[in-house]
Image 1: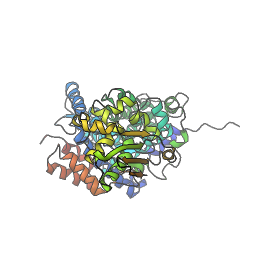
Image 2 (image 1 turned 135 degrees about the vertical axis):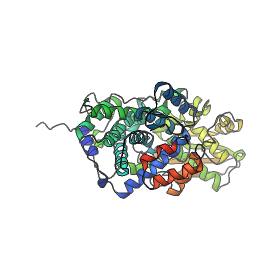
Image 3 (image 1 turned 120 degrees about the horizontal axis):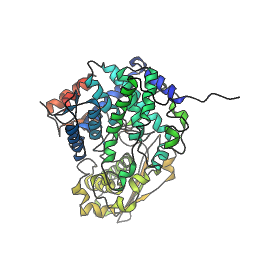
Image 4 (image 1 turned 30 degrees about the horizontal axis):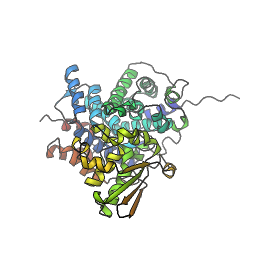
Length: 461
């Protein structure tokens, strides 16, 4: 007896298109506001990076004025270009949120799309705005998990760019009020826009920073095309030549729809306290705990052993020559030895540590030479539900100290409190905007008024 083939894309589209604010528990709405504040922090500060400035200059050259704010500047442009620029800003300092199971940065994509669209429309109620964002998080995270992140990375793809385009199309479709059929078309269209290469790792190029912006831009365009009747393949995810089977050797399609509505993936998303790759966060937490608790001094350290998750090995541990000799800030953001060295030396791993001055420091280079990277199968047992870490520091006098981290700081199981997240926002945003603007942004986020926020994030007075 032949059984009908599951239509995972259609089921996912129908659920997300029909998602309403009343369907979302209070804790989900709370997390949506929480991640909005985190997004604004990293986008405002990231707008000052040279990579973001290059995108902003391009916007000036190709676009007339429009309704949407380019965060951190006095520019206003079209929604698609604002989404591109703001997504690039939000990812430029490597401090944006990460969904653990999908190994994907969600906020930099979904909020870039949602804010640009909301600002360009006459009235988007806060609850509709946040529902659209939650729907986009859900789509992108489930698609990333269905691929299996290790398999996707193995083929050279970056989930934030590829899966992010699908999520942004859902967020945009929800804000535009599209039907389930139109949302299905938007997903199908996004499938031909889902691209993003990990080759940036080879030479520290800026393209990874552009990926969330491209995904947000493409998602908006896909939804707008669907709104005009443009069609896309209805089985873009599970089809024979669809996204899952062309972008992973071992996809698990049923992950797309299993337990839809039982919980929401935004609750499984983590915040980054350190300015570097997600795979470096747990080991840095362990390093900081040891050096602070034991008051360890760099001169007394003989060796530092760090176990790295297998999924992150080719991202932060190999190729060895590059990881032990970073030449630019992108290299450093994806170098486990560098992250270890600055954490030991400065007892911090923020933006002040990921600089050219530190990269060129003889002291940092010397300590990197004492870092040994290993694999530990015990860390893999619960990955990607958990992103554990284990570090061992051996001193010149023979003493040895070890520290394990099950959930890095910022994980849902070890979260930054609202107060800690507010401190992160203030520290990053006040480097760009006046204190009174930062206070007004905090007030509007806490009072759930997101559509009015972007204008406060520009520099025009």
